[in-house]
Length: 293
Image (cartoon, rainbow, N blue to C red; front, side):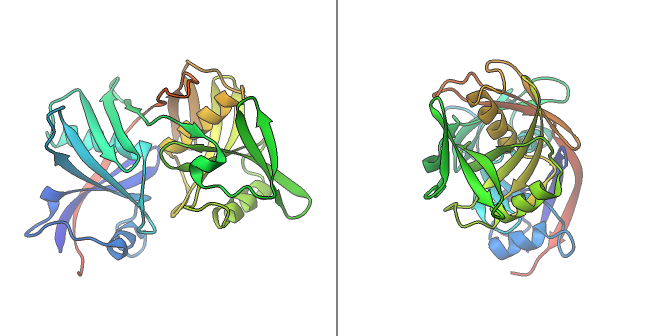
């Protein structure tokens, strides 16, 4: 099957965007093996995620189906940086003339709009802190209760333990606050926890360092991918964790620094309120590939 694709990225978190109109002489018929091939940086094109979009007929306005496949070929619920790239793709290809566009993904409906020359804002789903929300098996773990929010101490290598804050942003995350993001111990723990069987559907891990009450530094490890240069839902999870633990201020812009720039996250702290994510989106190149079916 021959088709076109657009390579896009946000702060180094890179994607291949596919649209039904790109498929030459046929309809979309890709499986997990195809997605793994496309994401492979040596054998395929290379990407953290493959993003598929299709315009839906809906009386409420312009709504697009938005599907996300990780580099391991598995479909996942949500991707904040990908949503911004999808918005740019839609506008660049004149698929909508609306200022605000709705994307329907497995996590629910999210709204995306441009807020400046370079930044795009996504209204994400309502964050849900808690182990049950992400399928985190905490049996035998020491619980650290902070007001209405919970965190868990995970022992590692007998003499060490790390405190994990679980939160769903439509997909599963745990946030770990440390003083040194790049210590060998932290990196080794991250590799270990990503392979752990404690999470029923896998997990995304954010390693965070507090800079001020409105700014943090973050490393992120994504399920099915490994360490990536940025993650939009990860930035949201980190900010929500910091606000719940009163490390960060609510109802203000939180700067989330990653290796190639920053995102901005805001959340009121309300249990029914959405979290907002803002950041850039860039087109890298357009290509065409023919893969065997």
